[in-house]
Image (cartoon, rainbow, N blue to C red; front, side, top):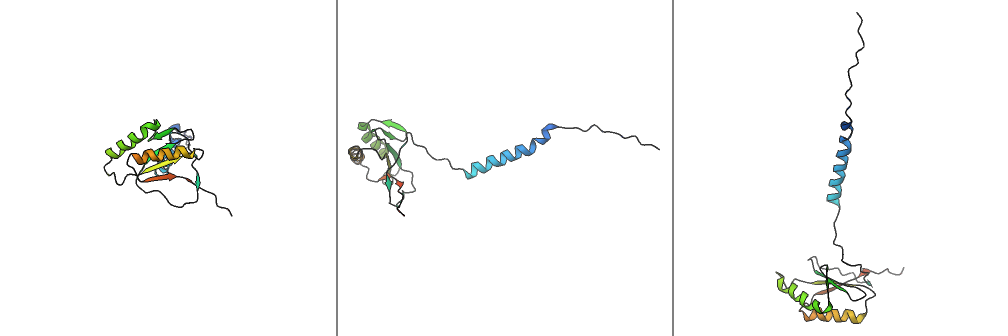
Length: 143
């Protein structure tokens, strides 16, 4: 009895080879979604002054005010004229559920003139805000 070699048609499905690749891509996507952190970016580039202080800001989200070296003011990513700053801070205080817990994080460029900084601080103070933090970068300590 002689058996003929039967060749069964081998079904090659190229989509089967993509399934492990799709699994790996989805696993990487889930990993980066869990491990990654999306941070808030500023409306303009600010190079803050250096400081040796180790004090950190409070955990509650403050109102962010950016002051560029040319005197341009941004509050919550909206450009303001310097005359509008007091009204904007007053409005934020009025709309807040907890005005006592509200604070301001002032990010000033290191090249900003001191007179401009003092004028901005006076405008914020005139609006009734007393909790103001100045954002700085960590200064390199001499070895």
